[in-house]
Length: 618
Image 1 (cartoon, helix red, strand yellow):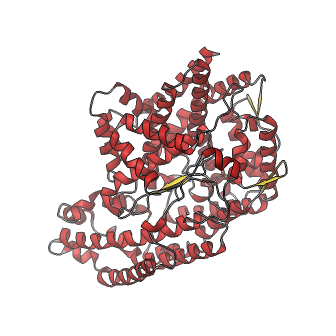
Image 2: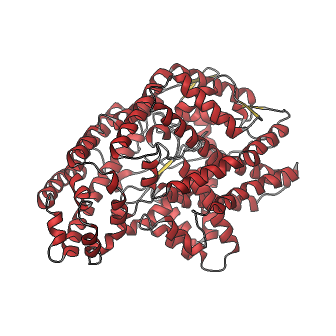
Image 3: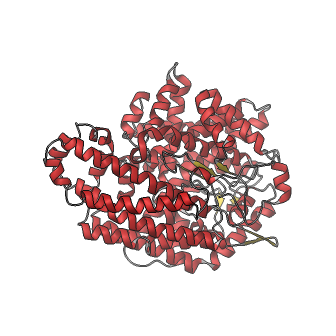
């Protein structure tokens, strides 16, 4: 997730209740809307209903076949064969259920204002939760098997193929509860966390912001913060502040409830730090994340403070209002990139790196795997959904023709390419930890930026492009680490009691002041801007993954620029690995080590170097 229009999140059918503004649609050209038929032809299709029945039947049969019997299989003859066959069956079930869940989500996020879609999504969540309850025993029982027995079994086929999955499963062992508790936690999630996150999503989709008499949804309102007219930016900021302020009671209640829900779960499972469960899910060690956070916070004065002071100078003032933080520069050309231009730019950039990368990305355009236009009720932001290996990913955008939208397209297609390549690992090992999932997306952005920069025709154009890239990097690295720091403060404080809107706003303002520096005036209204950021609700502590990925790619790209032939092959091998390897294994072929504090300094130095160049231009 990124603030402004570059909100990136993973999470939507073809019909929409409204179209994009006709004038803008004409300027941008015909844009694709995805076709979900590769998953299912419709929510009541024979194929979907058959898969629901199949999931019901297979989960019941799997439970009958294996529940209470895994320890005996591990201790018996040919344990690798019998446990491997069980895991193969489990993987097939995961593919069917993953397909059902992916379709329900994509169909719903395509028009969240439609009550029929909302009901379908909710009903599917309940059904899948019930099916999953039958499978819950499997991971729990595997983790009760003696380590030596399981290790020996994992040297035999077909269990051997699943060793990376078992390795990650074993990491959860210290935080595993007894079977009944796990079953209760799982079953109540649909009326607990899932219900509250759905309430947040539907609330944000339904909000309208009055910008100079025009009632806009969240995404177009945020886009106004990029308008060349300062009065429009201010009006949008005030509209955001007003409507978010009017909804603070509900948004604060949602935040308090979910923070408490997380605290209960963490306490029962024995997690010490508020973010430890996220680190476990990301397969990254706490000291690595702490080193990243400390390095970025120490660099605030050298990066964000310095850049915003420079931008204020360009804008003819000593201090920028908060709504001017992402304003276009005075000399920035007022141009829109048509959809066809965006497609050409990104595919050319990808092809310049490796034709295979462009060939994979081209499928998203040619086969209707992208939903690009802004529509009433459509989920805001952008995401790439991997669905399941037996199908293919889908990309959602809210494309409005800005240069940042071109970068968003490059970003999400990077995810898409990664997901296509990782599908060879199968349903259980294709998913990539968030820290590494951002690598391909940010690398795709960097390729596109370098391509556009190389085509810059004059110093002014180069300056504008460099400034835009620096702002994106600040939004990805500085802002996301500030968001992470804010979340840490919020969840820590929530352990002492419920927080008021004012208290949360104070935490937000203190962290934002530290990260943005004195050149940004955080005026009245900004204290509620925390409340529209979906990852605080949907995926606590997700945000540091963006900073991790951006700094990693900065270092990786430096290796690429200096590398001889063979870099692309190693890069594709890294993407194909999916979640089957630890970050240390994946980065070793490039001579990179995320556990080394100097690693983060290398990534941050790339941003500093761009600011140096901008200062020299000034």
